[in-house]
Amino acid sequence: MTSLLLEVSYVLLLAGAVVSAAAAVLLKAPLASVILLSVFSVFSTLLFAMLQAVDVAMAEAVIGAGLMTALFVTALNRTGGVR
Image (cartoon, rainbow, N blue to C red):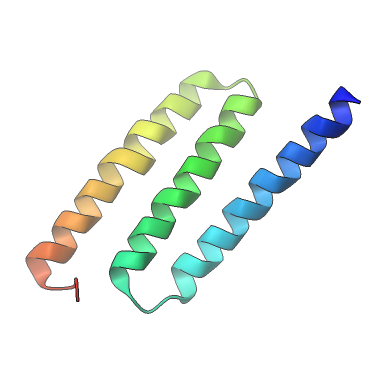
């Protein structure tokens, strides 16, 4: 029973990551794409944590969801990309 629950969790996390990545690429609004890229990073963080790669999960959370999102939003604000 536990392995079935674990496999379902993996599939749901991977599906969420694929959907958020595809939506980030397909959306025309830059800010929405940045937010979805951050959501993708959160899914990746959860997946790494479930795979017991806690150091990689922490790095992904800090760099992927935190710093890169802040960097992209700042770049969009400075270039006038936010509508």
